[in-house]
Each structure stands twice: as structure tokens, then as C-alpha cells.
Length: 360
Image (tube, rainbow, N blue to C red):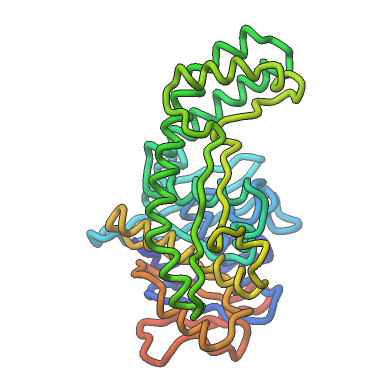
């Protein structure tokens, strides 16, 4: 699946733009603050119905406007053309494919698998545990509708249990324990499998690009430890209800699982340099793309947003040459940057100035 063209209206600093993107590689160049990242955000929103920069989609509306409208023509692997529209107006988001409303965003996500590389990815390595949980949950949701549904169900039950805990209602809280355990077990099993698969890809990739012999892996530590029977987990939740009541929240479960990036036996964030951590965060995304294709046989769309700036030219070239197969890739660069070799074919290059897009 790839996009042929995009229409953007009142999105961030882009008042109105009609951009042809019928190529395998699309390069956006320009100084900072002109709209390069905003364009990638618009493409991402067309793929997912949400932004990778904010959880409040209303923040994407251009200043002075009441809403935005994004649309694109896409071509699937069978050569069938379709039109995708994502709009926000009157405080409501609307998603359409060929004029038919998409009620569940899941129907959009699996149609246009997309992986974005951004500066915030460094938090996957050195940030809080929540960021690594988010990375792996997003990675897994991209290829597994079952995991996506399990996470939805788990979060819904967790929210209800937490509400009961805050009210001090032990009996009501206990009614949710069984279902929380069942969905939690499924999530733990899926996460353990995903980390195992990720660790078969990432360490070799890091050694190859970094030129170091370090063994960089991800260690997964479930909050419920080795418990894998619903009855045992229910018992554990009941035993710890007093602690939950004191802290007004459910203090154990997959929402408390830990993922730690390790260098040998030490946390990588504690001993790695800023450059090494930045490189690892980029390679996290490449490993995600490789793993996705291994699991599905589908090539994802890649959005690569200025993440190569802090790498030297040699490592930049190695990262670009290590990108897995993709359906389409978008890159943002500063003016006069060297990005890839002359051997690259089917490239569209745009100069971006104040929300306008001009063919180079």
C-alpha cells in the first residue's frame, strides 16, 4: 500500500496543500519550523486517525481555523485505488474510506501499517518504563489484532477496577479480578514472545551499525512474575487489595510490567553515551519494521523525521542502507544535507517553506 497524493487543509501551519507523493521515496528539505514534520504528521494521521505528536487531535488544527481536513489517494498491492479522509470539526473526528465512515480506527490501522522515526524515540531507551511498554504495545498491535483487542479489554477492565478501588469498594473491585487476570495472561504471553523475537534482530543490528561488540538486548519482567494461571493471579490481587486501597490504584499487572534495555548485565541507559543511546533508539524502529515484515509478510510505510542529524555521515549511510523493505518512505532533512546515494531511484524531493511544498 502506498499513497499517490495528499491534500492537506488547516493542519498545523499548512493552510492548503495538494502534494503528489507517487514515488517510493519522498524527501522533504527545509529549515526548521517550515512544516516538514507537520507533513509527516499528516501522513501518519491518514494511516492511524491519530497523531504521533499529541494525544489531543484538536491541537493539530491550524491557528485561527475551526478544524482540519486531510485526504489522500492510495494504491493497494492489488492495484486498487481508494480515497482516505480524516477530518476534525466541531470537536469530532471523522474517518472515511471511499466515502464510507470508518467507525473503529482498527480498520484503518491494518490497512496502512506505518512506522514513524522521531526524536522522542530516544525515550524508548532512556525514558520511563511507560515509554518502553508503549513501544512494544504499538509494535505488537501493528501486526496482531488479537493483541490489540486484548489490550483494549484489559484497559477497560483496569479502569473499572481502579474506579472501585478509589471508592474503597473491595467487593466490586474483586469482581474484576478474574477478567483482569485472563486478559493480563494473554498480554504477558504475547509480550514475552515479542521480546524474544525482537532480541533475535536488534543485537546483531546494533553491533553492525555501531561497530562495537556490546550485547544490547531487552529484558522483560512481568509485574506478576512467573504466574500464568488465572487463579493464582486472582489470589495475588486479593492478597494485595489493602495496598491497592491505600494507593488508590491497581498496583500490579501488565500496566506495571518492566522492559529494560540491557548492555550485558547493566542497564544501557546508565552506561551508554548519548550518541550510542540515540543510535539504539533509531535501530529500535528498524528492528520493529523488520519484525513486522517477518510476522506479516507486509512491507510497512516509513516516516523518518530528522533522526539522522546527530549521526556522522558513515553511520547515517549505514542506517539508511539497513532499512528493511518498505512500501513507501518519507524523509525530512535540512537544506544541503547528504541523505542517500545517487543509485536511489523513484525519488520525489520537495522544498518546504512556510507550509508550502515546492518540487526541487
